[in-house]
Amino acid sequence: MKKLTPDITVFILVLILASIGVIMVYSASAMVASQKLNDPYFFLKKQLCWALLGVIAMILFWNVDYRIFEKNVYPFLFITVFFLVLVLVPHFGKLAGGARRWLKLGPVVFQPTELLKLSLITYLAFSLSKKNKNIESFTRGFLPYLIIIGVIFALIMKQPDFGTATLLAVISMFLVFISGAKISHIVSTILCSLPIFYVFLFRVEYRRARIFSFLNPWEDPLGKGFHTIQSLIAMGSGGAAGLGLGAGRQKLFYLPTPHTDFIFSVIGEEFGFIGTSIIIFLFLMILFYGVRIAFQAKDEFGKLFALGITFLVVFQAFLNMGVASGILPVKGVTLPFISYGGSSLFLSMASIGVLLSIYKYRKKSFKTKIDGE
Image 1 (cartoon, helix red, strand yellow):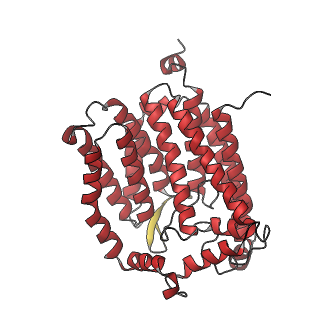
Image 2 (cartoon, rainbow, N blue to C red):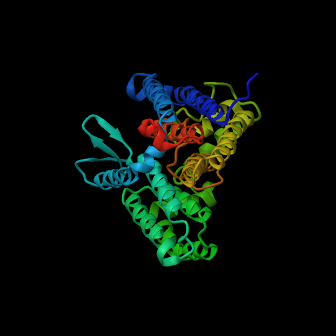
Image 3 (tube, helix red, strand yellow):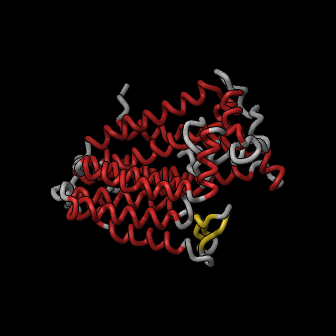
């Protein structure tokens, strides 16, 4: 039997996770959709459509040389940042839950931050691969990236979306670090950022409440601690093997947003420790093969691009699972490939397609591919 290559393996892993997502979105949302929308299949149908579109996008980008992103890095980043600004305009930005995170352009509604994840990684991979000789210099190498990351962080915080802003800041600093930035610059940046994070976390009432409820959710079990407590009850109720598909109880109007932010809790209740361990294992496999693809890339751009995509997906997954398990404070971060959400699912799968392309075209010349030489 022919051994599976890393790109085929990652493709299969993503298909498995997306399939689990379609099943679990239905299990988690059927009752809510039936009561509120008179259609138990409402979220299932939308998730299935986005999953199929995501598969098409993944296969398409798999077969397009990833270096085409290198040729269009600045227009890609400019358009994304423009969308990020446009979402703050009341006529275009859709207000939901007190935040403007969705951009409405005619019939199309999407989250610009999902597109930003890919465009920012593209820019950093391109720029760092070209300027790695200067990265040890603070003024010529490190500071420009710090300014760009800071501006993007500020724009996302205007929505506000602290979870995504922090996620992108961490991934960005990770790429800068592995490109050769001095540890002293990284540590200094972290120390200087602590007052800013303190203001965002403790000077904003609802975030401060989330931190305190995370430390002691039972102090306000029907208020700020409700999310965490219901998630822990769901996870604990599952035991080793779970209650069975569809048999979960916390999703029945107890667990908030069971098909989005807390879908991992539903998996824990219905499939137990075994089910959650399988999900963790699948993401660890993506991490392993993503790193392999990165170190087999033809160029430095491909290496950094692959590492950025891989760590973004896996780090976001573990953030979501950490929240569901009560290890981290509540954040609005979805579980890649599994949580309900068109923008997140489609662009996550498209990003994986780029990762697969990095492996496929690791030995081929971009000029030859484009010019037919």
